[in-house]
Structures are given as structure tokens and as C-alpha cells.
Length: 222
Image 1 (cartoon, one colour):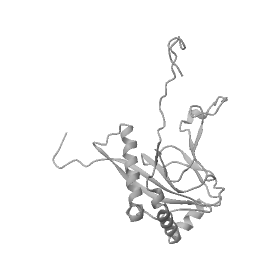
Image 2 (image 1 turned 90 degrees about the vertical axis):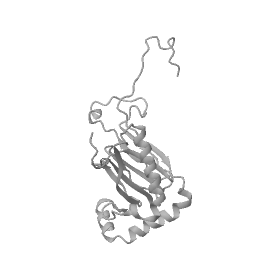
Image 3 (image 1 turned 30 degrees about the vertical axis):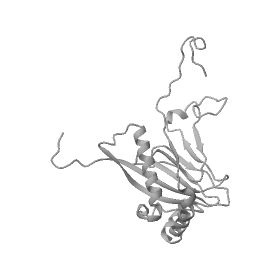
Image 4 (image 1 turned 135 degrees about the vertical axis):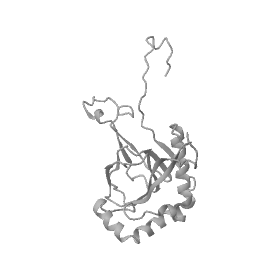
């Protein structure tokens, strides 16, 4: 749309402030590694009795290794995927001008999720982290989209009627999954997953990063 003086004599401009930034990327090795990644996740679930029991209380017909498996970042099957996730995290931080000279991004959590039929995740946030995200390893056209909620509490008061739903005026947004798609967002952004009505399991890996100050070399002072 033209913004010339003749079309806009009063020079009216709409500014965007306080945006919620999301990184989207695609894992380049997904076709090559998908089978081994998915197979390993099922192995983890099948061998994690405690995790299955805890998951059943939180996610009916679903499984997450979040409660019990704290060392998946050392699993060789996820080595390449995790390297890619780290690269995207650095890109995300760099684009936002975070201080990576004096700070480093440290992985705080890395876990797998299996959403069977009728399974869902309630809206939630990931406290005490800066970056959270998900990468999809198995999904189809019927798999539910991740739902993202407008984080500005005041935005929910006196919501004006909208003629058309657009990112600029919505209180909820959703992003459809895709094989190998990686989404990265601020950990404070409330999100959830509606019920999976598909007969196929929706499988993903989730993660958190924390921005921590680098240790100062001995004897160096500012």
C-alpha cells in the first residue's frame, strides 16, 4: 500500500510497539532422522513407568518425559537435532540484541511429548526461562495447532468487536504444526495444545533456555 503524501495528506502512521517475537525454522535432517527419532521417543516412553503414571494424571492419553527424564540432552539420537535447536536459539537471541558477549544461553530442559488421540495440553507458561519452544517430529493435517494467548492482561478488558480476525487484533493465535517445524518463543508466553482428534500420535520435543552471565576470568575486574 502506498504511503505517499497524496494518499495520506495527514501523514498518519500505525506503529508497532512491544511485539511478541517468534522464531520459525525447519530441521533440515528431518527426513533422514525422523524414523530413528520417533522410535527412540517410543522407547523412552515404554521404559519410563513412573513417567507414564505421572503423565496419565496430567495428560490423559498422552506422555511427556518432562517429569522423569532429565538427561535426554546427552542421548546421541538427539545430538544433531539439539545442535540445530541451539543454533536457532542463538539466532533468536541475536536478532533481539541480547548481550551474548557477557552471557550465554544454557539449556535448562529438553523433553519429549506424545499426544495420543483425545490428549491435550492446558494453557501454561515456562517460568524461570527466557526461551521455550517445540519441534515437531510426527504430525499430520489433523494434528492440533499450538495456541498462543495474548500476554497483555489489560487487553482482555473491553475487547472491541472485530470485523476481521488478524494478528493485529486477535487475543489468541494458532500456528499449525509441520514435520520438522521448530517454533521458538518467549517463555512467558502462555500457550497450549487443543485436543488431538487424529488417530495418529502427535510427537514433539520441547525445550527451555536460560540466559546466564558468563564466569569472569580470574583476576579481571571492571
